[in-house]
Image 1 (cartoon, rainbow, N blue to C red):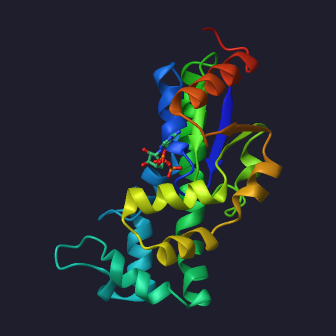
Image 2 (image 1 turned 90 degrees about the horizontal axis):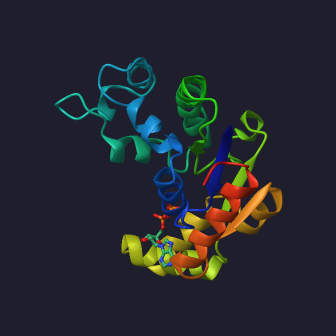
Length: 199
Ligand code: ADP
């Protein structure tokens, strides 16, 4: 069984996916995959260099993230070009990993953690999507605390994503992570039972 897991930045996706893997689920992490396609030797990085020039590389051949960020920041056309290179490869690798885990053990839960699942229109990969929700004020406070961003910077990050309330409305199942971790854990247990998984 496969579920998609999403939420907003700092809403608690990693926290919930850790609780699920602790119970025996397999995890596919879209952030890890997104980093892997930009590693030296990967064809996606090579294509990005062709598109944006050698300036996006450090002298040692690894990606200069800050430089690439400057190029696509405030340039929707460049961002669309970059996404056109990365998104198909990321999507393909997500599908490969989740189906390989499912084939390996069809009884086991496979959790696919994708921060921008709705924004990237990856919702059509799943029949069940779980949203890890916190109210915006909590999300902002946790993001500031975790990252040391100012309020203004943190608000900028939040505003660049689909609103957490809109994600909650679209979810098949909501885990409210606005309280204590123990309360979240109880909801994870409930989800586990609801999915008919063995204790
Ligand atoms: P995401 O993976 O969605 O970005 P995280 O799971 O990393 O979110 O959580 C964001 C931050 O909030 C982390 O610093 C984490 O330790 C903290 N956090 C997560 N859940 C709770 C909770 N229930 N209570 C307090 N802090 C939490």
